[in-house]
Image (tube, rainbow, N blue to C red; front, side, top):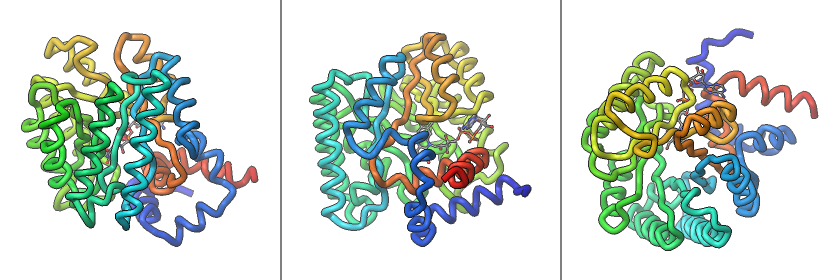
Length: 311
Ligand code: FAD
């Protein structure tokens, strides 16, 4: 069957928010193969093992404990606790500073108590700093952007290496990038993975890509530390070109990709002398993460269906 890619993306992203579909998919035996391709495993031991293997290949890592849309303070507390433990474990295993952690504020309760989410994030930043590494705040749907940036600025007072993701598909992002292009600020530029209305986000691939390049220019021309998070060969080539144009050496920016996506390209960029950081999720709550990956690439859907058939 033929699908219009934009349409398919919408359907899959709608499924990403559906608890009924979630129960169906999680119940299917499918999922193991597909999950293994994109997720380190269920436990922090799996995460450490995978981090070590990536690090042995010259890749840097940002570790993400899967979980979002936390609905209770207890759940937020448990997530924060897991981050504190895994940071200790990374430190003990001498995997810092090669590995840092990525944090979804929604998993710390941002939606119902942003003060508490800030306190948890602060404790995690303090632990990361003790462990000799740092934290990057993921960016989620557009209703959380202002709150996330506000929390970022508060955290940076004591933890200046904390970074943040910016989504090129948001109309506001070019302006945000100009403001965030300040000394030492680590900004991860990605296209954006959520379903957003036209009022706030560019809808066509071309418009998103053009915005990505404008954001990239703003970041590369400033004194901050750009983290170019994309698998898109054209944007990677443009980032290399801009780095040369703005006279940035290989240690003044980095590339980032998701675990399991274009692994050969990840190693090619390492061979060229760039820092390549792999976003490595682990944990049992992989559903939302995986559905966003499927929405990005119908080819992954084929992989998913083949895995189903082979059972
Ligand atoms: P796409 O438009 O998906 O793909 C562009 C091109 O890249 C394709 O045409 C193809 O040539 C190539 N490509 C893509 N995937 C593959 C593949 N599987 N195999 C081979 N070629 C491929 N989103 C958020 O909303 N918030 C975040 O905090 C966030 N953090 C991220 C962190 C990292 C490190 C990365 C890499 C992504 C993150 N994302 C985040 C997701 C991001 O927003 C995009 O949804 C995702 O990266 C897909 O966009 P893309 O840039 O790869 O381009």
